[in-house]
Amino acid sequence: MASPTAPVASFAEIRALIPELPGPDLDAATATAEREAKLTKPAGALGRLEEFSAWLATWQGRHPPRIEHPRVAVFAGNHGVAARGVSAFPAAVTAQMVQNFIAGGAAVNQLCKSADADLRVYEMALDQPTKDFSIAPAMSEDECARAMAYGMMAVEPGVDLLCLGEMGIANTTSAAALCLALYGGTAEDWTGPGTGVAGAALTNKIAVVSESVAKHQSATSDPLHVLRHLGGHELAAIAGAVLAARLARVPVVLDGYACTAAASVLQRLDSRLLDHCLVAHVSAEPGHRRLLEKIDKRAVVDLGMRLGEASGAALAIHILRAAVACHTGMATFGEAGVSGKA
Image (cartoon, rainbow, N blue to C red; front, top):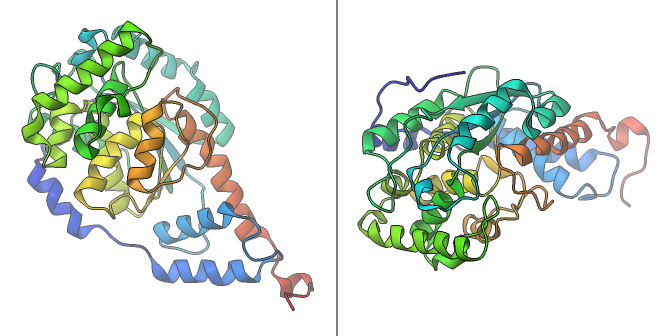
């Protein structure tokens, strides 16, 4: 297990990274399109698989694209707002699930084995939860920037696809609060059952989200301050990992609602900052579909999942590999001696 010992960063340093981020590699995109047009199939016949292979090449900056060393990174953090009874499970479950990841007993372990992916679990000081954001900002600027810098360390040389996820009791409450602060609407629009709250418990969760965002209204003009006021250590780490991946030309697959909410902080900083990201699946958490509309993303699959822990992101590796296999392995019309379109 890793420990959060990244060098101190600041929001100013994080903002300074943005102009340095590379854009799409247009040469790789062109090479992909040219090969795709020659493959033994009608144009567009593989649907979104064609889109995925082009996306991978464009953001890896090479043609053909490859997925040889995918990494699944799960960040785990505890939230002080859990004390408000917003989850069906106690905060102790976060650490217990981390141990389950280590023992190989969680769903994400099985999905990573199936996809031949490297799983890393990053424990974010679970004995030091964020402050209860219904009372005070969840993190100081220093704490939030440190967590983002820590998340950046998940992007190591050789990784060619980064799949991100999280574990943290009460993080769907944090996700709902982030989305409400970033995109407006009502707390009801963004707040769902999470681990399974219903009835009076769900009503309480909605009220906590509404009251908390109102309390931190002064921070909502700056996405990074929204993150520090209403986010969590693990959500800040995800945002940092997304930035680091862009710097290293590593495409990113985001998991469910909480993970996408964390990344959406960057989208509010600059609408182009998530161009190198796909969203793996549409969570059963109702706010996720609304969030995908806001950030203009269409998920890879819609299977009614709501587990978190990067389960959907790990599953998407299979589909992305299938896209690469078709793009690189199919014969062209000329190679196969098949007549092209008349």
